[in-house]
Image (cartoon, rainbow, N blue to C red; front, side, top):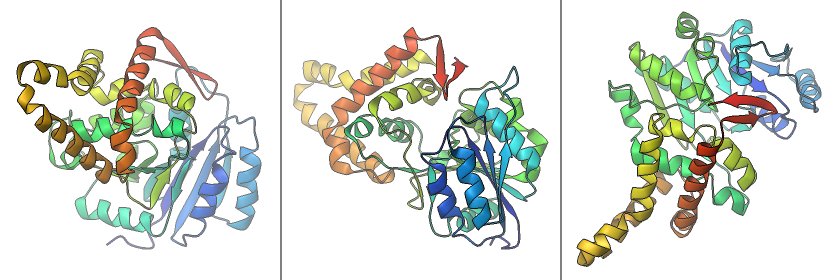
Length: 327
């Protein structure tokens, strides 16, 4: 079990997060574990800093760090995380996105699991909150791709770097391991630094684990189809090992795989359809998504994947949080 006196540094990079930051801090201050909560205000132009200061008056564990202008050669979130780590004093570093919500004793329980398995990194894919039709048509594709391509138990048990996954929304590091590797500095220009870090750790024989849809870790990633399209178009290829051809092959198999079955083996088409349905059942239950929507909206999820891939092919640069990100 984790030592309750071991300090955990909760590290939150935040840029224009007035929509989310107060919700996360309200959940964190309910937890009385020994921890410090550092929020890096990355040049926000909204009320993010003001909200953090208000919460710091309620809980002395909360500290606002005012960010400097982004230096050349860095992406914003990677720089913010690196600066947070330099200020942190904990035995463990928990990096959280500002749109994450934590419930109950999830920090204590994940820390205990990390110590039990002797991990250098534990990452969680949160349960995704979906309220609008735009979200329902887009957000589930992350879990669909991830869980059909990579059973997450392999992240911990397999020695192959191709069996790597992580999610920057929730990444728990052993502090000593973090400072031996300085991963955010090492991958300071990586748009999808979480997966890059997981792969590098596995190369260095540092134990990594990744789990999905823990009920006590929730997130509303995007609030519209447009937001989801912009967000996924900057990182979807990373789910396929950064191989565009593999991504399109996956889509063709998922969307059009019934055609050769229909032409060559029509009598097996019902079995093929049953297999698709069971795959959707498996991934939606594993991800704790609505099973009905996962099945009924599956054709629209495939359309969204194709839309994202086509956008990716056309675009050479991206804007995220009003900053350019290059592929």
